[in-house]
Image (cartoon, rainbow, N blue to C red; front, side):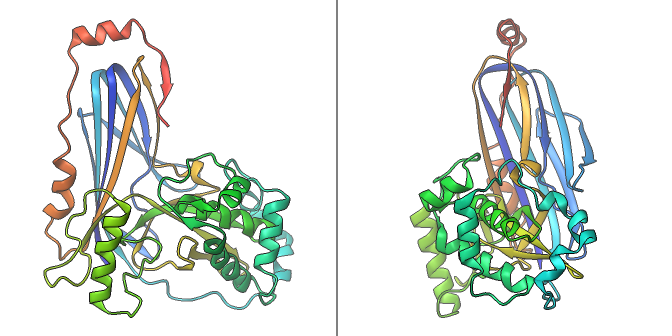
Length: 357
């Protein structure tokens, strides 16, 4: 499946700042399942971009702006070709998880991490989830992934990064990153290495990424797409339906998260806890890590005394959609102001370093 993706990140400062430095992780990765056909990152104000790869193999764009500015706009445009995942894992006994070589090579995905800490409650939930599963690795992975949506209800804006797994379970609500964190924690509880995956999902409703209605008909899909947009108040929706009024051709969304579990003798098995299903052609991988902290889309600092507001949006389109359906909604909101030198000097006298995220 060919997908065109535009990611917009817009920083607005209450007063002029004299410098900002950021790391951006939004470029899709190249692997056996997906190929990046093109990628371009632009900024306003214009600045040089240094591209590297981090420890986990994720592409990182480093960019800095020196000089007075009250806004910073980052637009990353990608074109990606994805393919179905060819094979499901073989039946592998859970006894093989104890193999010393396997355990040592996946140790960082078995241990607690910053956003994946667990105690008795998570152990109990994980044990309950696999109680009836056959004694093989893939069956236990599937059982846990399918259990997560029974523990959490998807609700936009219900949590913020930093909530613990116990707080998630107690609250019973979360977004995709919470579903992924809980699944990763539960898998590690039962001895299965698991990692957090950041990426994009081409779907109006990320709890049902196949785009089909309950009866599988295009009309049902179109009706449900309209209802979801109206009920959830997601960002500006461009081209929700194609010319026949049947299926989404372009959607305005946010980044998505899912998980991969290590199966001995097979490799990484990808599943999406937000909907309890498989990862397919509509999923586009940016990168993976122990948890969100390793693949956060943006991390940075700025020099100045102002407060910062950060807005992000992703528009994904199939190639049948005009290019303008991807780029124009992004560029329409790109009027960026640059502060005068005098204003910069006044604010520079009160400089303080602040964390953007």
